Image (tube, rainbow, N blue to C red; front, side, top):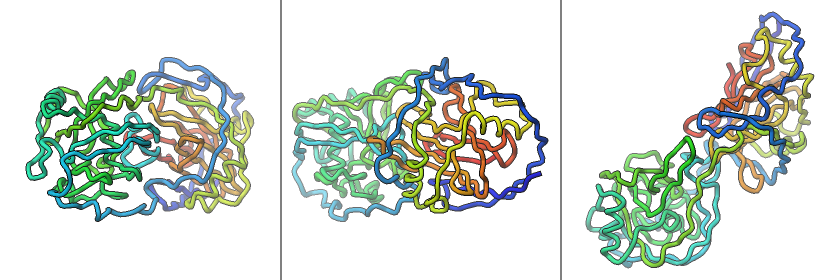
Length: 433
């Protein structure tokens, strides 16, 4: 019988530490099991499962810079820019947007981000163009025209000597040169939902993000996940605040219509650059990263201060895998599951990649998950610290199960095992069973 104190911290879900007393009463059996690499480093193309696996080897990582804080734990980066609440009557009918660089999309782990739709900080160059100051009929004294299909919207723009804006032109007009998250600044001004003509983007374009808007662009197909559709920007009234971000993107049937779906027109030659859709990637790959590199990552995460400043040690394979198996009476890992002590790169959905690491810091063991950003930067996604637990801790992976991987100090033992789960809202949680 063994008495243990386990503390859990879910970064991004909760900053509290919950201490649990766990008594293991399960009979121990020595299992004459070696490390069976039955599933391989599995990859699959399907949306919810896989039809095959292959070992593509491990990938060396070189973490660069401090780990970004979880979006849920970030202090408000700024506030609504009062200067962008402008009188509806002021300003020209068409705003000239200068050519230049646009950093499209968003940062992995941002609130409301769908990685299958929003690119990861995609840098593009746009030529100059004109955009109507307000939604069609471009008269702030009149309500925007809604309830038309995309084809009808394009026809109306053409009749007025314009065209539907491309989605990147729309995003650029919304973000401005300073790349603001919202048209109203660092935060969304909810007043704009009721009075869209009163809110101006950094370029002076009105009502951006206050209504869904057709664009001339398409959202490309993702095999077994999403058909080709029309790209719509903005959000409906009453939508969650993150949906009003300039980067927010949705896929809509081009023949649809709705009373919350309008459009605006652009002028000049259209910009041909488009947003690429991500494809399915290998679900799990082993990652080459040193304990010292992980210790540096831990040191830059405030919620991990309890294990910061201590030596990080990785568990050994296959010895520690067999130790975890020998503690349980589960009879072995679940079907098609490989147990490992190696850090893993995990791609649960197209466009998303996470680093999952298990190890020990002094007297405490841990399981950590990080969003992977461009340039080998990282953002904390979730964490679990097992206080006064020297492990070992193993991870499990199965290429047919994309959105969940198990961890365990004792396989399938209550309180000493759990899952790292990628939820449907694109948040990561580490739970203890």
